[in-house]
Image (cartoon, rainbow, N blue to C red; front, side, top):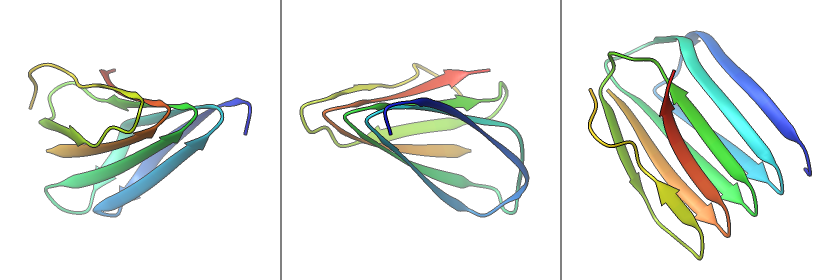
Length: 97
């Protein structure tokens, strides 16, 4: 809360991951994640904060989300990680790393 944090997802990663930012910024790095299956679904919740998901180049990315008085900045074009953004007066971003 009220701070910035960086989380590196490394090693075997379950098919679904949920991250939450409350009144702060959370940077999620997926560069070292080893997917257990073909797909990874990341649910990113930003409540009065920011969640930034860093996706490695070469992977398919599908960005979807709901908006509640916040902004949702999808990455244009790309190859299978699904990022579901739930900004509540906050922001969810997806970036290539």
